[in-house]
Length: 208
Ligand SMILES: [Zn+2]
Ligand SMILES: [Zn+2]
Ligand SMILES: [Zn+2]
Ligand SMILES: [Zn+2]
Ligand SMILES: [Zn+2]
Ligand SMILES: [Zn+2]
Image (cartoon, rainbow, N blue to C red; front, side, top):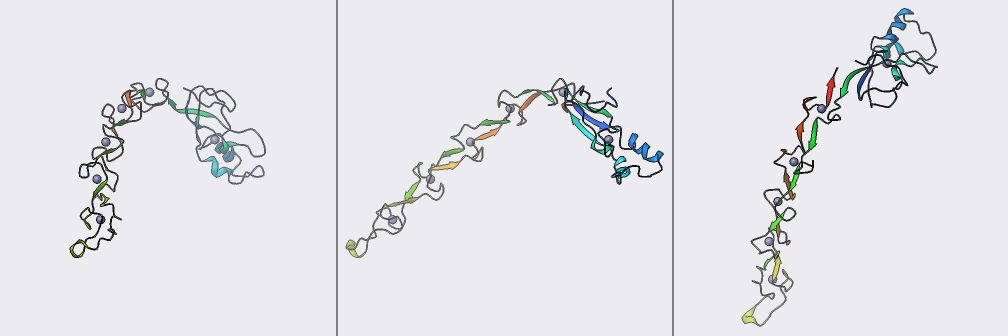
């Protein structure tokens, strides 16, 4: 549809273009015509480059650039000619879908019904503490008929220690969301989008 367009002309549609000048195109022809001779300074290696095809993405409305592969050394002209290979789907602007999922606003995740990924630790009743085993919660060590009562070194006299299971926080990671606080959106299976574009079969690209 769009073939061999020159540098500095306006890009007609957003998409992927290939340069006709290289990859066996105009540049390679010039070199074969002159029998592999190097006609200008700095052209060494250009014959090799001429065999490579250049691909570039251009956006509608901008100007085509010169193909770096096809520049004539020492000049500002080139053998560039851009041909459209794959256009961006105009219906979905290349996204492949028409709308974000409303349930998750396109993030693919929805909030969990827990408290920011946490649930209360039932074992310690959310206190984060358990009775100190060393002093049975008394806060003091009792020896010899209760005559000597030094402060319990394990709980420093408080009678309680951090609950190991919840690390003293009184909360546990919610199993359902693994403590993340959100879960995959069921509405869109976590993709964040709905309404696949039929014009491009969801690829966002239209091949020529
Ligand atoms: Zn080129
Ligand atoms: Zn969703
Ligand atoms: Zn606990
Ligand atoms: Zn203690
Ligand atoms: Zn949760
Ligand atoms: Zn599309």
